[in-house]
Amino acid sequence: MELELNSVRLASKQKVAVLDNYYPSAEARPYRVSVFGAGYVGCVFSACLSKDGFAVVAVDPDRFKVERLAGGLAPIVEPGLDELLQHAHANDLLSATHCAVDAINDTDISFCCVGTPSQSDGTLNTDHVRQVCEDIGNALRHKGDFHIIVMRSTILPGTMEDLVIPTLEKASGKIAGRDFGVAYYPEFLRESTAIADYYKPGAIVFGQYADDTRSIDALKTLVGHIGVTPHVIPMGCAEIVKYASNCWHAVKISFSNEIGNICKAKNIDSHVVMDVLCSDTRLNISRAYMKPGFAYGGSCLPKDLRALTALGRAMNVPTPVLDAARLANAVQIDHARSLVDAASHETIGFIGVTFKADTDDLRESPLLELVEGFLGKGKDVLIYDPHVARDASQGRNFLKHIAPLLHDSIKDVIAASEVIVVGNTYPGLKDAIETAGKPVTVIDLARIERPENRNVIYHGLCW
Image (cartoon, rainbow, N blue to C red; front, top):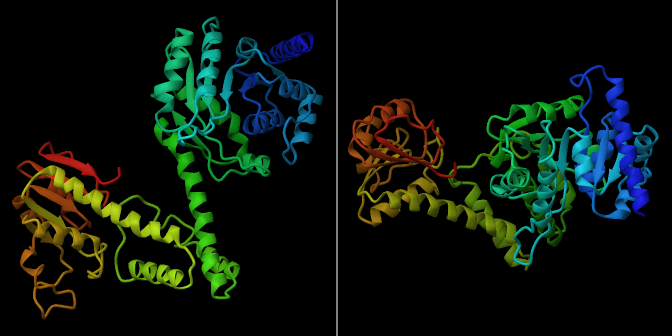
């Protein structure tokens, strides 16, 4: 068995020697790649890289996986994988080993595709991540050339900064971003369609560490033929975007099933309903509403959610997803309230009180709910909202207890307040905040441009 594995490593070194002789300079030679972890992600990734003409060394402690890959055979079931591996084997573009030192010495860039299984409490088990970082770091200690390490395993935000990079630096005795490159490249491969997903991705995401553009440039080279412009974003954003995507998929599935259950109870074809829903790419399947911010309100969403969940109860059909949407909205209102409370001031100015900008509708406005809550606590409240009636003759949204609080000038509200709650945006708001002549706390529920005024203490709701 050991002789067979040594032969695999020897084949890898021979392949590298052939590549070195073929290309006139190191700059002209394609990147040599090692992939740590030969499970579903690592195996498919290795096969696709080989198909694209890159020399790949797969690394895994599992002898079965190493032997299978070394022979051009798939260790897992995935449509189209066998053909890619056979092609890679025939063209001497894929080898396999269990030795991290050989893999690091023979390649320029390493991808970590090890598993991160759940523990009993739902947290991630990062033992495999730590171990592979130690193995790579130990190998890097004795390598003079600049090497790039890219994490592809699904990891929670902060894992790169708190675990991966410190472990690599400690084991190697080198500094990330200076002596070796590091990046995060989340995978979005679905089992059974992984190869198609690789070549036709919805998005490609690269998490950049500090100013390490060299690693990002290498990644762009590896995926340049795919035809999708990568999103180069901060490391923490890249770590959590995979979770945001998967949790959104889970919500979509559960939401669709919930609508399906209600439809079945009413003898309605749920697939017809969802086909129509998905045909609307302006609002339903789009960027619309997909921006973190304040709670929803108005005459439609709260009322219709209540109605459909009430129908579910009447038919004994549970609606946990729809119920959770109502709860989540209440949580967001409480979150905004807690930010204002934490400022510990008595005079609060509200910029906007209608349920959203460019409307005069106060029905079920979460901003109005905040105003009324603080009035009930005895706070002094001032409001700027040009769309709200100041007397009964001006329109349907006249409220006797709100009208006396309304002011005609944003600057007057800001000048008289200790806390400013920005619920909606209006012309002149930015200038009024930037020219505030006294200390003021801004609670931003609308995502305005962060003020540069040193008198302003700024808190974004969820950014």
